[in-house]
Structure formats: structure tokens, C-alpha cells
Image (cartoon, rainbow, N blue to C red; front, top):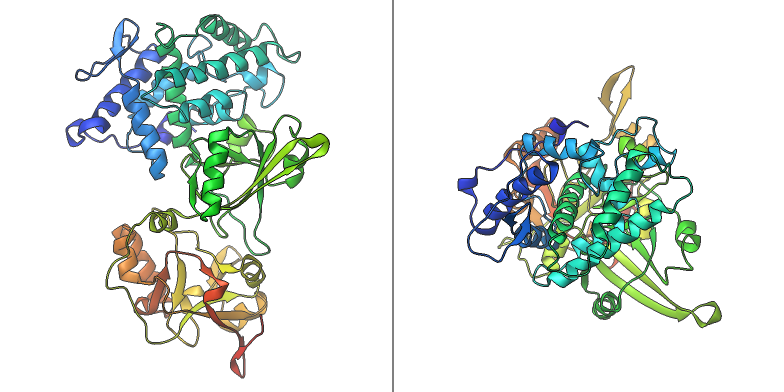
Length: 510
């Protein structure tokens, strides 16, 4: 990935107001100052200021905007222009650039790729996948109104530098080792929020946290098809305040959002054995069935970031707390297991009081979810029809339903043969996919017509047009499409039927 590949259009400053405008100015100035591209800071209004390079920079404004965006599940309100991203890229690669950069870490430890190239938006994810994970999460959990909480970032950075410099597999003459030595020296004795060295450290960590959140959305979404719904596992240490919050939410099947970057492993053994002596708590996460906010750290990023499969959930991802199990382990050690179920953003919004369009669609005909025999075991095992991965540019996944009573043509699948794609006929689809099924659902569910969903979910006009066009080309009628923004639990299923080539739709026992 080059600097250009993560460029996003920069909103004109005159179109921004209040804190978003201040954050846009300050974040760009901060990156430019930290990277050495420019040595002046920025002053906005009469807010209390922190000092960096002899100029005043208010770190609280961009940090506050970042944290508020994470709580809403949207941290991309501030855009960075290509020149600023290029400056960030240069400081990442320069051994005398950022103090916090993990560039060269694996090469210095004789691991990873030989050249150890670090794309600009991979570097911040790499901060997560190393010992820099702790200060990054401290930054994401910081309270902008309490500067003393920012000292937790310093503690995490101090620990990271000490751990790396103490490693036997670290080349002491490498640029990365020299960077860690510079960082350790800069942090020595830094224990007060009024220390003039603190803004530099906080500024770098703020930049990297912001870039990590941006980079994460460019990774592949965690997905799986068919079979029992996967569980992801994480060993961790939770502060008592977080445990209390989880206990409260569990008692009410409530909504919970992790303010930091939550890592999970697809393998339960990693949760069971790795680090259990040091991490008294564990989490079991049930992701969305067909698409997830979780992101795989894979592809080129995986060569840089991790040598093991990992799934990372963006800060602010909503979860339903199913239960918190507390028990005593061997030797009387307290153990806590938290079971979470990931929610879509639309489901979380409805849980938090958002309203659907009114009047909603109230179909008189039966409403069906059409599916394939390959997918049915997963649906039955889940006990719910999960939301489908939304189209590109849409952040509100839904369960797709239809009032059509023979077969929904938009549910057809295609195959590639001799380099050409063709759609399967219904009989061939049934043969290849172990049968065609439909589930009749309760019409009293929170249902939307296709046009209502387009408006409510703010679906881009070109995306809606393509969905309609493709549906009509297959013989479907978008007027018969019905959308449900929540998973449909088994209690709301009316019947399950199999399509028989001669008898039509035949009831099937669950």
C-alpha cells in the first residue's frame, strides 16, 4: 500500500464547524510537526493548550472527537490529505522519525520479511500487534478531561521499550533498537501531566491510534459461510470498572461497547493456554453470522503484523452481553468468562432507542426467507436468521425476505466455468446446494420495504439502482422485497419448508 492508496478526499475547512474543524486543523498540523515536515503547531481559539515544539497544540480536541466517533461506531469524520499521509509515511520509515514507530521491529528480531517494508496505514496496526498494544488501548480509553489518565499511555510505552530492549533476539545495533533507546530516554522520569515532554508522546500515540482505526476498516471483514457459528476467544485482564459494566449489561441483556481495540483468536486453544497465568479473564465472542465488524489481520498486513491468525474488532463495536460467569479455578484463583454476541450497527441503534420509518411495511401475504441447504445447518445451530453482509458502501446489514411464494429469483447463485460466469438454474442450484429451503417469519417483526430500507440506511443511489437492476434482470420484483434490520430468532419462525421438484413446498420438521 502506498500513501496514495489510503488518501481520502479532504473536506474543505469552511464546510466543517466547531470541533470537527478544529480537529481537522490540529491533526494535520500535529502529523506535520511530529514528522518534521513543519515545525510550527496550531492554536485554535482560547482553549487550554498543551505545548509542542514551543507552540500550543490542543490534543484534547482531536482526541475527544476520536473517542466520540468510536462510541458511535464512526471514527472517520476527520479526513487527511495525501500530503499529510505522505509525511506520516516518511516519519514511519525514518529511523530518526517517530519515537513510537514499529518500523524495523521484525527485521531487528530476525523475523518477518527481509526488507520489513511497513505501509503507512499498516504501521499503526503493527503498533497494536506488538507490545505497543497497551499504550494504544490506554489512549483509546483515555479521558480528555483528565490529563492524568493520559499518563497510562506513558506507562504502556515505558513497558514496551523495556521489553524490547531486554529481548535476546533483538539486534542492539538495528535502527529499531536505537529508536527504542531514544524512546526509553525520552520517557525516563516522565511522571507528571505538566511535564513538557508529555505532549510529544501523546501526540504520536494519538496519531497512531487514529491511523489504526482508519487502517482497520481497510482489512478484510471476518466472514464465514455455513456450519455452526464460529466463536472467537480472547484472554485478557479487565479492570474492575469494566467487569462491573459487563455484569450490569448481562443482567439486562444490555448493549456494551469496548472503547479499545479488542483482539480475538479463532482457536479456543489460544485462549485456553496462551497467557492464562497472567490473564484472569477470558471472552467468548459470537460474531455476526455472515459478516462481521471484526477484521482479519491478513494479506500483506499479516506479513508485517502477526505470525498468527487474529481478528480485531474496531473500537466502539456493539456487543450484547449474554452472560458473565465467575468461578474459582485451581488453587482458588478467580476466573471470569464473558460471553458476548456482536451486534450490527443498526441493531445497536434500535437497542439504543432509534426509530424505524413509520408507517412500516405490513405485508398481508406470508413473508419468507429463502436459503440453501448448505446454509441451513448454520441457521438452525444459531437459532436465528442472521443479517447478511451489506452491499459495498452500506453499513446497515439486514435479513433479506420476500413476499413471493414460489421462489425469490434474487437468491440465485452463479458459477465461473471456462473463465465465464453464469447463473445456475433453480433445479441445478438445488442439486449443487443440497436443496432449497424457505422459512416463513412473523409479520409483526420490525420490517421495512426495500424503498424504506434504502432511505433509512442511507443507501447510496447508485448502489440501490444496481440492486434493483440486478434483481429485475433475474426476474425478481423489488416491490416484493422485505428487510428486517435485526436477526430473526427461532421464536419468530412460523414454518420451515423444502422445495420438492414435483410436490412444491413441503413442510420439514426442525
